[in-house]
Length: 331
Image (tube, rainbow, N blue to C red; front, side, top):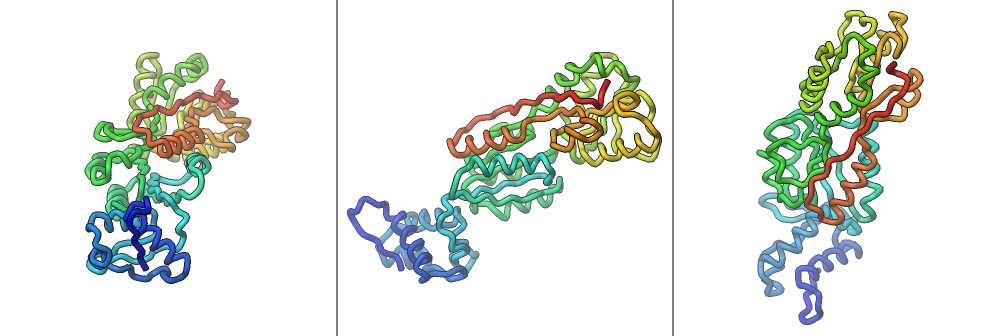
């Protein structure tokens, strides 16, 4: 199954890789078949254990083979065209994360496999997904969201193979990242529409500690205090009626829908009676209620830049820009 030749210019570990690929292509090896053990390959060809292990690890990282503790190595995929595998861990899937994901895939190029997982803001799921996939991928793209102390598990991965996405906490600063500065973004963008904001009596932020970045809250409070504005922090939309001349900052789309439904049930008019600034741009927000004002990063740009960082092996931290798109939902 494995052929090793001397003095042909191809490293011996690569000859092992090529031999196993040829065996899969010819049908000699199929998915589920067991490979010869490391020691058997080593002894048969007078190789070092490290040489054989390097070859097996390359195939493992590409998802072609997998190791089973106490049993050995098995063929897990017959698709030998995959050169690299990327572990992508999101908090949740929504329309703008889908834009990010699609942009990331489009800019990676061929022969790179991306496996996407979701932790749904659950620390136990987050930890298990990473622990279960240590050593199985070439690169790890991780969106920690607002989970804390995530480095306790991430540090088990090779530092130069990890890319942090969207939020970067203090204990994650050693890693490459493309992130949003939520505190600066909300402060600067609300400042751009301060005259419109002052047309309302109260400014309300819908904020869930479970899902929303703390920087969003800090930037909002700083903005309101520096401009002497009346403000409230609301955990979720309840059954109480809306107050006329209130303006809402809404980070999630579910709360946006609830506000619009309540507004219509009370015969209130968007912008004139109730102001709305939503977070994260989507196509629907261009047309809903004549257009919803949004504060948003460019998720397509984030996906493209992330792909470039991985392809070029860049070890950098990049702040993805934010902007406010003014539409008919504020005065």
